[in-house]
Amino acid sequence: MAIPAARRDDVVLELHALEPEDDRLRAELLRLEPAPSQLADSASARQTLPAADADPRRAPFAVLADGRPVGFGVLDRGELLAAVLDEPDRAVLLRGFYLAAEHQGRGWGRRAAAAVPALAARLWGPASAGGPALAVLTVAEASTAARRAYAAAGWTDTGVRQVGGDQGTLAVLVVAVPQPPVRPGVGGSVSRG
Image (cartoon, rainbow, N blue to C red; front, side, top):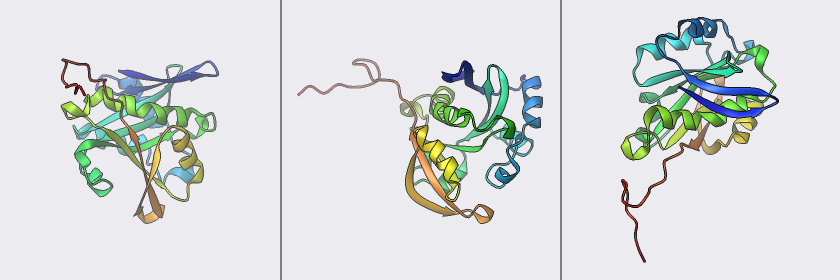
């Protein structure tokens, strides 16, 4: 399942939810690394992919540029959400998200981050059926470039802060997960006034 992230500069960027049979793609993702300075903020797929595969509440995905893997991330509906939200059942956490060092600086991270809500909606369905209404992430408050990129992708700083150990203070950002429109007579009601 692939979610397109806007086309720009003749590069098609998409998020691809990993399936167990994606052996070649998984092997390529394990070779991608964020920049060394980013390893404190985002572990590589070598560390996070096996954990995501072992937990049915997590969905690993590849960021593809013209069909080639350039990044990785995990959507997580597990217990870590309770640390950042009062209503964790309404959300999904973006974690372990990065573009490989050699693919940074092209705007692809912003475009991929903007496509995350659509991927969450496709994976878990609408909030009315138990899917997430919000996507959440934490980012080092000192990482101004990352915070600007997320803001440009539609993520909003909640003002909530966490102490992040080696990462310092973390900002909590959210974005709405798209929901299907409610049509009269199909799973919703219309009030007439």
